[in-house]
Image (cartoon, rainbow, N blue to C red; front, side, top):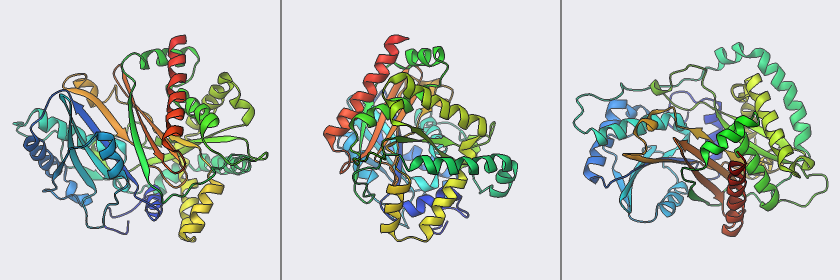
Amino acid sequence: MNDGLCTQANTFQQLMLQWERFAPYNAGQFITLDQEVDRDLVARAFRQTVISLGLQQIGQHPDARVVECAEPIETFITREMNRRFMPSESPLRAFTAREGAATHVGIIYRHIVADSASIRLVMRQWFGLIVCPRRDKPLFTPVSLMRERFGGVWREHLLSIVRESMGEVSRLSRIKRVRRLVDSDPTRPVAWKRVDLGTGLIRPLMRYAKAHEVKVNDLFVAAAAEACDRHLPHEESDSRRDLAIGTIVDTRAPGEVIHERFGLSLGVLQTLWRWQQLRDWDHTLETAAAYSTLARRRNAGRTSGLRLAAAVWVGCRSSPEDLATFYRKRCPLSAGISNVNLSREWPSGHHPSPLQGYTRVSPLGPMLPIVFTPTTLGDSLNLGFTYRTHIVPMEVATRILERFIARLKSLAAQS
């Protein structure tokens, strides 16, 4: 990486560096505690977290302050998502905010340094030092940075890569029929909303998914496709009537210990629908499930590095204007999904008290106008919604969200 955050950038990190030519590529996470917490304690715990995890390795200053947010959390997050990290700045911005009797404690981070799983280990350490401030020793030893495993991974999956290369030819043919956005200027600001879907939805959705032999993530992907098909502004074109949704996936090897390795290990999958498949729900869901099943069988998340490497190659040879045009024409995604179930991770052991909720905030790259970010914790489900406001004005964003949520509630009622 060329700015000192890490000694060696992997393919996705190189791509993120190119995306940062357009606009900040920031993400965030915060926990919600069901009580007021002393802000000095929060600040001391964060300093201890930085030191105990060795986060100086990524340029984090041990004395980095914790900002106290005095405005609505959605307003604060939106502003921070649009505020670029400077080269000399720590890549993690810690904050706290009061909302009624609850306290939000979280981090806005430069996504290039870490993925969601890595930030969760920081949040676990910070949470532990807030609720147990007199703990004799840290919850974790210092983290080790991930290194690019290009040679080993690609040799191990050579057959998958050959197969995916052949599949890429088919995908490129299909993408010529996918709808493009009316406008997709990646330099324009983003906004963020949060929707608490409560405790009565996720269990019925799980039952519905099991009964229909699909994954819960398939429901989210299909519901996003349906909402964008109906409400997202696309170019009018008889030859481009299909639709595509992207899915962010963790590419760690099965069994890899995530709480000792800090960095970024992500891939991108795509689901494509012919316009006829979007005319009714059963076909929409069937297509989403078929793509995800095939992707799991072929380990496509890990081998998606081939596509990412091709995008890096194009970016190295393009001006910002040409690169923006490339993404709009060659990567016409209507939305992205970043879905995480925390019910088997550390937050579940402290939920619903004192940890009332866990919220994630996803960024938008130059190819996406929207990202849906569902997070499941126990019986609760919350939804983050990031959108580019000049493409998706507030009234359009509201219609898309309402359609997405209405579909999920309809499925839950059928379970």
